[in-house]
Image (cartoon, rainbow, N blue to C red; front, side, top):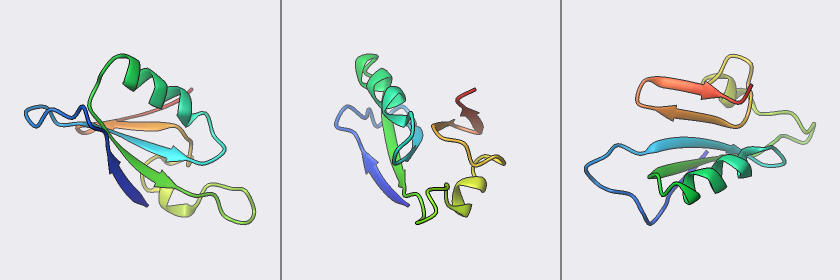
Length: 79
């Protein structure tokens, strides 16, 4: 996974972490965070040759869903 932090991050507020999986709906969450000017960090996750999410995404969410955001201890996956 690769971490990328956006330019609007306020050091006083812990950022939301977006687990971004290629070829997923994660771009929608990225656009939403930008429009709302919410601080975030992107953890880029690449699909395997089989087009499935990699096992490390299941460490974040048991179903390996994407997009997933983590805000503090709370993990929320798109339903």
